[in-house]
Length: 213
Image 1 (cartoon, rainbow, N blue to C red):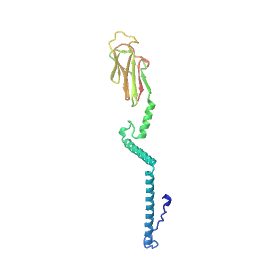
Image 2 (tube, one colour):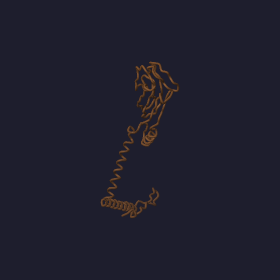
Image 3 (cartoon, rainbow, N blue to C red):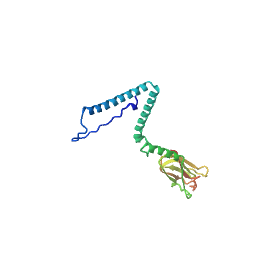
Image 4 (cartoon, rainbow, N blue to C red):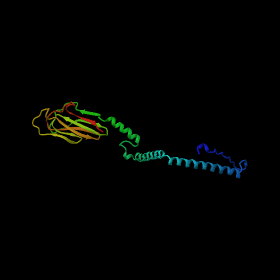
């Protein structure tokens, strides 16, 4: 039995009274019954043939199992896609999440720098802002440097401390500070102990941010 065995059903026209050209009769009702029965039998035969072919063909069974497994994975993915809490911050759907991840990868290794435009001779006890940066949300590694003595601060935390020095040379009082930031405004400050210089040169005195995530 194939689809070609189906007999095309010829529909009958019906009209309301007082038109009598389509009378309700045993002949017309039998026509309907025979059409329904004939196509019902054809469907049953085709279904039986399909089941028989699947049972006798292990490859088809394996193929159906594979399709079922894929459908199950898709259903599971649909559930996760609907849970926006599992998506990266700033994205509300899967396409947006993928786009954001690719975008973030493109920014890895980006470098920002800030340093003084004019050199300063620091006074003991005074606080000087050496550099400030406005960073987008992400992971940033911060490097601070100065040739002056005192407390070197990044974002309110004392990262390096060098106080109480009686003698000073530019080579032995160089300070370095490191910190991690998630973005926003970051500052490098020095609470001076009166030694050294704040140079207007990023090679000696400044703030550098490198994007790492």
